[in-house]
Length: 297
Image (tube, one colour):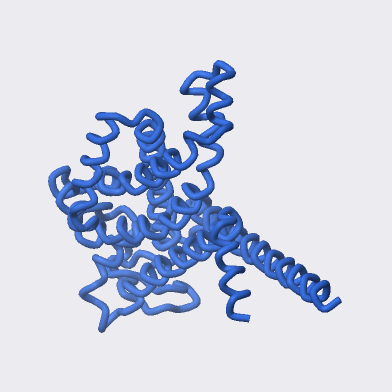
């Protein structure tokens, strides 16, 4: 009787935790969707032209007229932050899509085919991983020259090996499973096996890693722009806006705090969403958490 009651309590506890996880997932997903919509609709909802200069309004503190103040050229900071969100967020999403797609394809090919090509590509990835990521990105961006596109290319060059290694490891773990052998015996070709049987079974960890990487890529893009290797003025981009206002931190702090807070909020939301996506899609992690909690009890 006591064992049955314990089992019932554990099942109820698991259900409550699962419901809480789903609530957090839908909450953070909703907040991220709102953030993306605000960024996408920025040209229609900005209260002022984010590029219109009015030196008579330069460095005005936050007020009812300009909620986040103005910069040194009299441009409304709220309008520039909203437009900067479109540039920063969607550039980060594009970057994550590129490195996830390319890295996953490379990992699928290497893991499934193996051999000398696999060894060569993995040694190339080792070269990229041997250097500190941001230092390597600065070097590549410096060679390519400034500009947002070049910053995306630079970060893509140093970020794809992580996804390639993740996909390769997942493929190696399942490519000799019985259902893969059955697919081969049924006459399925390599392309069909990879994309119909292998990819759907490894996509979960890849999606989790990609979601968690959005905030990281956003920070690194902003960092390159802050150093003058990303978006160039007068383009509204959070990193370059912080770079423009860094000399006025003591006299006009709102010029740098507004884009800084926007970066902090956006990165936090994407990281929280990534954590909840991991809890939902990664059953192994959930099992380990449950076992750890049960062992403590």
